[in-house]
Image (tube, rainbow, N blue to C red; front, top):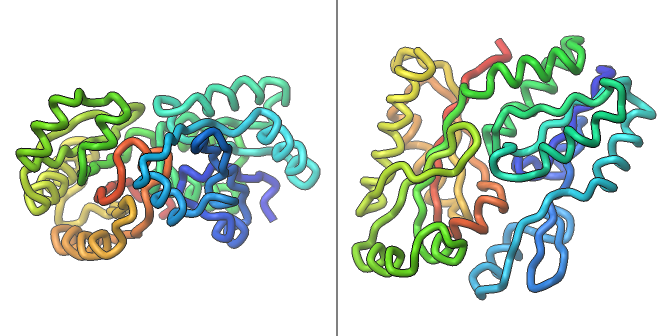
Length: 289
């Protein structure tokens, strides 16, 4: 058995059951909903989250408490020599910075990875870490590998409604009203730290084509991979939009034959800013081979 424990948070999309199967630990992300604290995957399911979101409930994200992080680390160090801790992107939450600060008291036994991933790309980092730990790599080596690899992923997200971007102050009410009239579907991107605007689509079909074209551009110009044999993970994610996500996955694989794809929910911390109905496509370089 590896003597390096792998820890991540529920922004990776990895459920508690999947974590148990993988032999890792997942810290549940806390959410404040109408003044009450809920924990993703513990007492807050995907279905309950979207039900509350649609009612207009006040929802805000938080980060795992220092106490919960320390408790988990201390428990794991009874069985493991070292820990690799993979939180969500430092540009999207303070949890990475908090973990770095807490790790300073552990004399190098805790290696906190800042590789700016979230959702299915974060999940891919966790799976890489598990593989590398099983190969006997030490925690600091795994951290260095994952951080060197951090730019080898992209996420593009087509938002279905402007309501939640308006609620979060990311667009003005006037822009939201005009966009709704024109049926604009913004396409956002996550490359590195931030969730940024990328393009505007007038139809779902156009939005999906914009995302596929963006992935093609990234494969050639950012990753230096040939389109006919890119050897990438081309994962699809969504916010409460299962059926459309699986249909989109088929379209993506038709555009990039020979690659592999996983379908998952976008993390709830992203979902609360963009609302239900979103579709996303991600590309992540394969490393395990």
